[in-house]
Amino acid sequence: VFAALAEFERNLISERTKAGLEAARARGRLGGRKPKLQKKDIREIRALLKDGSIPVSDVARRYGVSRTTIYNHVGVVSVQNSRGD
Image 1 (cartoon, rainbow, N blue to C red):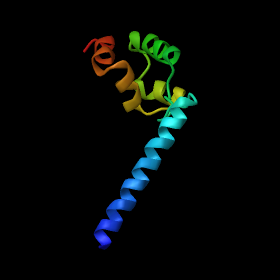
Image 2 (spheres, rainbow, N blue to C red; image 1 turned 180 degrees about the vertical axis):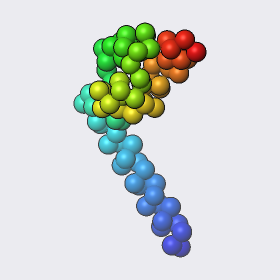
Image 3 (cartoon, rainbow, N blue to C red; image 1 turned 120 degrees about the vertical axis):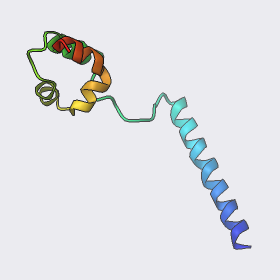
């Protein structure tokens, strides 16, 4: 009996959540986290890393993100190639 009530409640919660998300989308609201780097930032970072004179860690610090974020957006291969590896 308790299992049936719990399942019913879970379904109600799920339906309300889906309805809320759908209503938010209808109002133009998008879910998810805002990106740390804009397209302009990524272009600037690529330009900075192109000649290989500035370490990735310095660029990451300048933009307030981690090195992993830089590698995810710019790519490991392009950073390595810019250093001549």
